[in-house]
Image (cartoon, rainbow, N blue to C red; front, top):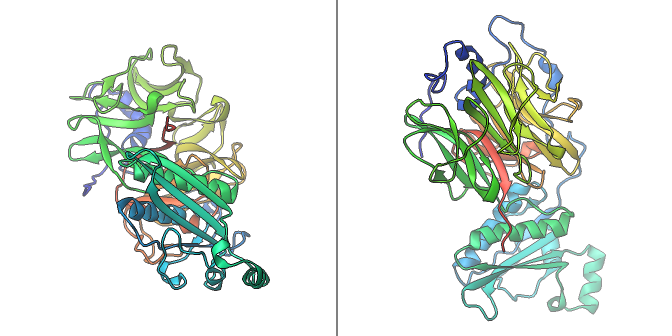
Amino acid sequence: MTLRRRTWRPLAIAFVPAAATIALLAFGRQATGDTPPTASPAGSAQPDESLLGTIEVNGSAGLPPLPKMGVVPIVPTGSADSLVNLVVRRDMELSGQFDVLGEDTAPAGPFTHTTPMDLGGWRDKGAEYVLRVFAQPAANDSAKTELVGEAYLTPTSSQAGAQKAGNPVGDVKPAFRGIVATATTEVRAASHRLVDLVLGALTGRPGGFASQMTYAEKVGRWRRVFAIDSDGFDLRTIGPDNATAVSPAFGPGAQIYYALSQDYSPFRVVQGPNATPVPVNAPGSILGLAFNADHTKMALTVMDSGTSQLWTGPRDHLQAMPTQPLANHPAFGPMDKVAYVAGTPVQRVYLGEKPVSPPGFMASAPVFCDTPQGLLLVYTVGVGSGADIIASDTSGSGVRRLTQHEGANTYAACSPDGRLVAFFSTGKRRLGAAGSGGRDDSGAGLFIMPIQRPWLAKKISNELGESLRWEPLPPVK
């Protein structure tokens, strides 16, 4: 899909009194996403960019090199074999947990489901881990397919010698073997679940690829809601094509909830492809929407009588939340704490009554990331004519940059396992940047980056939207 972008203008404000236009200006950029936040309002001093630091690059972050992984290039016996291998290799490349070797580095093949594993040969090619995945018919159920993942550790030189002397190659056993049973029509989704199992076995923390994202995007006259898989596949629209939809979020029953306005009427909460109305007891027009982790509580940005206010609580018992002026873009964290953006003339990220984003920088779109290294707040700040994504702890300390001077980078969303951050970027990136695997990751689109190694960011889609959210798929029953 080709996107046409235009200069930002307030979104559907005909129903709001004129005085509310000023209140919407700060929020409008977050609702529409057409213009990233600028560094500071016109005429004010530019903030000190050194407060944000510089982005870590390969070799400067004090991290050990990623372990190298070989993925066995199986000779496919059917479409499920081909698909599971494509999905698993791509997910492992995106995960930021391994340096995935190219297929041309594999030892001499061909490779089948049962080919003896020459782990010494893989070690000679540089692989420390070897992953073999394939599909096989499920026993006693012709409508099911089993996806098998086998992870092997390659031997050191001394171990390889001992193995050859006392253990034939054909007797090598995997360090981990996982099986995911699936309907033959759901192989792609099941392949992501297999990756999550393997990552859990090899790293101690299951992956987050059995998940999906949702966002809003301008299409023609309107804004529509979209959903997309974690690897950038299966893009699909949600809701009507003749109305303005903003602020999608995953809610109860794995349904996508969003705010919808038709014919410039006030925004109301709806859910699902049929835009089923969702009654809420908050007055005014709904321009922001979030759910807590178990989807039992909501947070809404409500425009009423020329002001914006946050309302939180169970859907049938929402209450106004005390905030700074012009509060918007709520995000739930652990213990149902709510981060939001507020203030004038410069909007900052707040947690409760405390500002946590750097002073002087226009901030937007906070999200909590429960990373293996601890809980972080990730959000966008305006820098010059662009915007960058930064991370800090929940007190505002330990600020570090995740992007730097690569266009407008906005609307971060954290993966369910806390190791990846997705974001939209206008894409002023260098061709063949480090970690791109030889692909052209320049140009606008949706990117994924490991939060510990942001220089490994990779583009997964050419789509460019706003209000990005990322949540796991519901468990398979």
